[in-house]
Length: 502
Ligand SMILES: Cc1cc2nc3c(=O)[nH]c(=O)nc-3n(C[C@H](O)[C@H](O)[C@H](O)COP(=O)(O)OP(=O)(O)OC[C@H]3O[C@@H](n4cnc5c(N)ncnc54)[C@H](O)[C@@H]3O)c2cc1C
Ligand code: SF4
Figure 1 (spheres, rainbow, N blue to C red):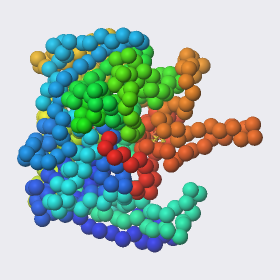
Figure 2: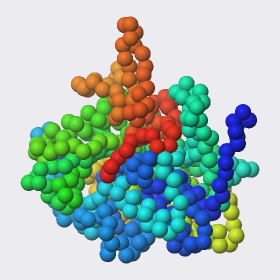
Figure 3: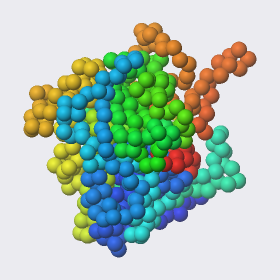
């Protein structure tokens, strides 16, 4: 709907509109064109280019890529490093205990997986999509869902040229309406439009609350003698206490590159905790610190990751559109992998969109997509690990991970001793009052990893400052703010981080 005093927006019509050029959105776009080359498909992306806002580990399971682009292994792609060694450690303050691989459930194995920059994989997928005729518009954030008679009819990109105080600058330009017979939302974890759709269509009714972690990551160029190409290493434990879930990843890939990251489950209780500072402490552990000596940090960023799994996946379809990828929350938490399911869900939704279009349908509900995901490879992947996160949350790291491991073993054999456990509270409701918690000895703005929210002293008075330009679009404030006062919305398209290869 246009506000009366504003000029009307221009509109463009497509068969399918896709919000977000991550693995889910791009896989959907490619599959649509493979199935129906004559159909028009447009993708909007808020990053200044495809990949600019992608932050992931990433060790990828190639199941999605193998199905989407079977010929990829013979092409020049950014997927160059096969996993050659897979280590898992429990950390104490100064020591580390390596868990033998034979104790880990087979689904945890990284054999056959690849270490990549997911941003670069998205750049590769975008080229494939464009070669098939998909229109991709980077630098444009989808800011509003268009509704007609209660049905999703597309999206509008945000207006540009608005000052901090809301006034229209000389450069003010209206956004565009991109109208589609179907609109797929592929915004990733905690999508801003997805959030409004979940509420409007009550998509999360009868589901467990979605759970999240914050993942912080640095990319390092290390000294050649420190590099062990193909090594994948995960840890749990220190510096987090037993009640705080999370762990680290360290992936050696390509030419002397190491991705190092730390995930903190956002159901932590102590408001003094700073995930950023915990990550920095982790890098000082004797197991890892030597890797970085003599090296150079190339980039830093953060992003929320969904952790609710099978029990928390909302209803996916609604009149005129559907959720795909991490907008729906398809991450397999113990594997720390979601990109394969993002691609598989994009393809699955695309297949149902193509079939609906072929039958002359438009702007109705893709009920078959909703029905199909649980019995698909995505459902099977998430079902076997559904109790890992609730056990971790309820029992703490060591007992929770041990029982979660046992449950994954029994699920591999086809049964569970626990049935399907619940998650309980949403993450914003788990913080305890500061007075009941032990302060932690570091100073920083806590849940935000980029120093956006800051108290400064002015004339002896504290003043709250929002350094919006620092924001890396991780969405953690939207998830964890205990009063749920923060509603994160994308800034003008092209803003935010410019990750080269995260
Ligand atoms: C720290 C970390 C480590 C991870 N490690 C791994 C791993 O090793 N292996 C693995 O498989 N998975 C891993 N994951 C999970 C994986 O990154 C996600 O499952 C995957 O990226 C989801 O893909 P997606 O396309 O759904 O969303 P995303 O990759 O988040 O992509 C969404 C895209 O949509 C854009 N967008 C969002 N909102 C809008 C809007 N309103 N308008 C326009 N554009 C918009 C974003 O800018 C972004 O480009 C990790 C995640 C994190 C955070
Ligand atoms: S302001 Fe919010 S979205 Fe931006 S970096 Fe901080 S926590 Fe993340």
